[in-house]
Image (tube, rainbow, N blue to C red; front, side, top):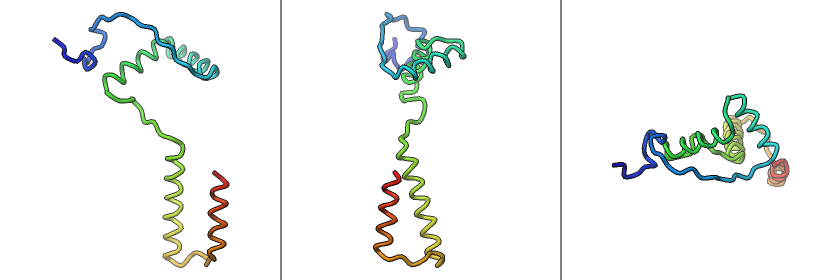
Length: 111
C-alpha cells in the first residue's frame, strides 16, 4: 500500500483519471515552446506532463529560478569589493562627498 502516491518513484504505475489544465502565456512564447517541443518529438502537453512529474518526484522545481536582480546585486558587490581593494592600495582618487553622491545617483539612473 502506498501512503503518499505523490512520492511513488514510477508515477506511470498509478492509474488515475486524466484532468485538463489551462496555462496562460504570451502567444509568442507559446509558438516558440510548441516549435521546440516539436523538435524534441513531443507535444507541449507531453512536455508539461514531464515537467509536472519531475516537480512531484523531486519535491521541487527541477531548475534554479532566479531574478535578474540577483545577478545585479552580485555584480555590484564584486565591483564594490574591487574598488575597496584599489582604495586600500591607494589606487583611487580622493572624492568629495558630493562627488560620491553624484556617482551613486548615476548608478541608480542606469538601473
